[in-house]
Image (cartoon, rainbow, N blue to C red; front, top):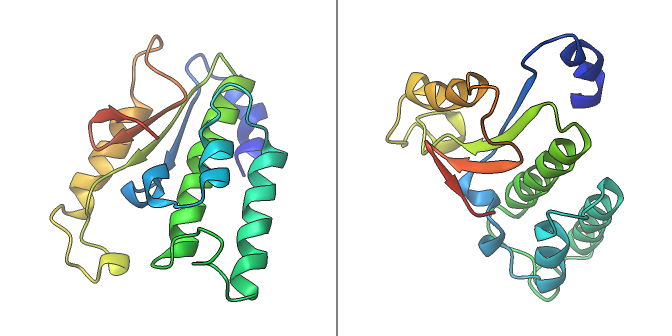
Length: 153
């Protein structure tokens, strides 16, 4: 979807991409050292490498070997999808240096996915996301934010 919007974003004098992620997508939540190494290589990670990690995860999932192969066993698909999106955020930021491209874990928000047990309202979570869309032109790019702060991946 991001690539579909790139031509329109090139028309803007302040193009922004904000990917909504989660604290669950932090690499510390993935036991597999290989997956962590691939997804953490901010300088040279490529889409094909991220795809390989996801393909291996799916293979291991289908074979019922997530734990044996070093994948998270709780919320595994969610965790991997968010970690992969965080890596993709860095790929896009490197590919389009005139864009500001970031991902954010907006916080523990009261939504269906949290069974409405979150501590933030949907509006508060959305405010954290909107803040990234409104960064000044010299703002950071290729980063992951937890709520309002830059975080490690």
